[in-house]
Length: 157
Image (cartoon, rainbow, N blue to C red; front, top):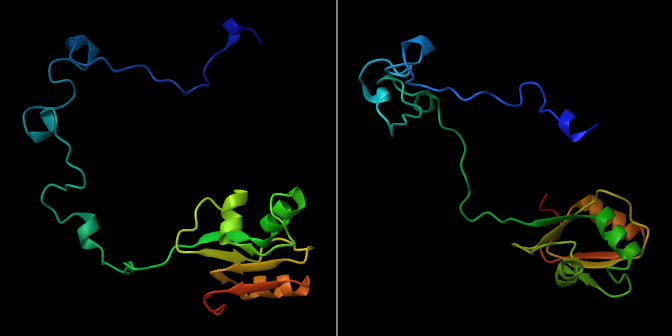
């Protein structure tokens, strides 16, 4: 492979359409926009407008609800905590709390708290204190001989 052999993939580039360049091009005069009307003018974008017909997004039924005060948790898997302990980024002997997880770089920011999920294996005896955890995560940590304390009840699945 040499520099002069480099090519874009087929279909990756497209030639520019030169409009308004005479009748022989097929895109002369009105440049494919037809005659008069709002859509022939520049600076007009009519998204979702269906010519006066009720637009699709208004015809469809509205469903659902977004809770304005919902909580957003930073999610951590047990396997990742174990990986950080093995790498020496988290001290397994001391209590692993939310500040320790942020300091180690495992969690970027706490948001409304940290929630631990059970994905991955735990081999170390860990003492974890976070906002929330799944039941499976609590069982997995206790099975490994550690403890997982939550500020919120663990039943918040």
